[in-house]
Image 1 (tube, rainbow, N blue to C red):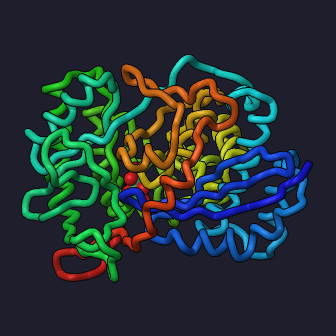
Image 2: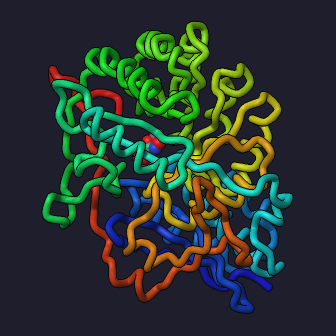
Length: 413
Ligand code: EZ4
Ligand code: CO
């Protein structure tokens, strides 16, 4: 048996998703997620124009060999486009292998290490009351962990904060279409002021601890916006509120920045959603500069690469915090859940439910119940794409927003 077809499917049920469909000569279908938010067609081309023909005729069971063939073979290594493409192939091959074995994928990864996967939700609000209402809403759904993001006095719309009102679900963390829903031609711009943010946030965490007690796991995302010394000061200032993690406090490409943050605080650190290779973590892991690995399976070379990365992290007592925003398709989310269930050094899983249209296109079997996710027992990844439903949603160009400081300087994202 061998790979007979490799097809790339681009669909836009509210937001853009890129999916790889691999079909074997005896008709087994595997699915992989290759979505790179705001740069979707680059991966679709990488897969469709360069990778698909290399797959035809290969033995679908040779997952490690295929991974190395696609990583080492082309000379150009790493980068988000390449690694999202490799991830999609890898996920699809694991999906096929588990379907052929008749077991949910996590069984091939060593079986379940836990009964459920603790998830965190995105609670946000432009002001404290809206944020508190959102936290309460998520607690009522069973969540024991929330990422909290809020507006900064004097700034307008802030990335990661729902503008639509307390507790309202949102497909946020956008790449944004134009205001009328048609294709965008350029990103929107938001303004940012780090000094205002640093002055405001510690008081927000203080109020959350007063109102919600010590049991709530509080996470916060700095979106790479602080300089090393600003991040060190911030991590130290918020130490009394005992965050579960502070995410992306500094720009991700500068690994040694986190040495400075570590020297000054014991606030746990998470980073990696923009990383795509184990080498992005080499210093961070070996020097124990982080506590959680934030990579997405979709952006870090798939299940094969993530398993190795997380095993490497485990040796240093570092846990998983796999990226799970709505720009990861349900296929990428399912891949994360099978890993989460199987690995020993699981930390927490980000969870933003997809909208109804997305769930019409991607039929999922994973579940959320009282704060915990589970990948389900369907053979394979447990997600099937409905090609007719997908065809109804045409690709619509969208961009992540650009940040400028209040003096107009382009700032970190
Ligand atoms: O903004 O995935 O922690 N989660 C995040 C994400 C990112 C988007 C960017 O594509 O920061 O929601
Ligand atoms: Co983030």
